[in-house]
Amino acid sequence: MASRRMFLGYTAASTAAALFGPGISAWAKSFMDTPQAGWYDKPMRWAQIGFAEDDPGNYDPQFWLDYFKRLQIEAVTLNAGGAVAFYPTQVPFHYRSKWLGNMDTFGNLQKSCRALGMVVVARTDAHACHQDVYEAHPNWIMVDASGNKVRHPSDKDFWLTCPLRMVKLDDADPRL
Image (tube, rainbow, N blue to C red; front, side):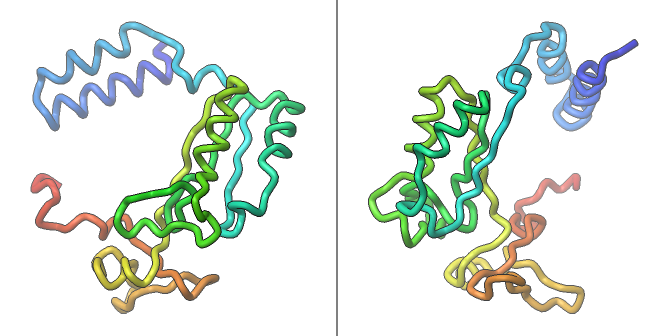
């Protein structure tokens, strides 16, 4: 009986061969033939911190580190960015938290968690954007059934983005 991992591996290899040619199939299959535990197979106790924009400088990182130790957390998902960045981003249109200043809220907590031997996953959420993104890339904004651009329902300073519209159609794969 095939395992779920083998099924997914063969499915991925078949899809890769169909999209990119038969040469890639052997390459993809080589990953399934040598079962190895990945980083994602080891941690069993996970936690997540979803920062709010005003958290930088206003939360106690040591509280969370002590909490993780007490609960024997092995991996954590930390909010890094998306609609609001919690690190000193230089990415155009990636809005930095107003409270970030010269801090690196994500980076500092990430380093501290890694020092505890924890796996750290950076969470990003690009579901919304600010007015400057709307003006520069109106094609990235979600539209309703009538074609109207959609504001965020709980924060009118944000526009909702649509991941399906963030790729220009002329750049998309013609086979799609």
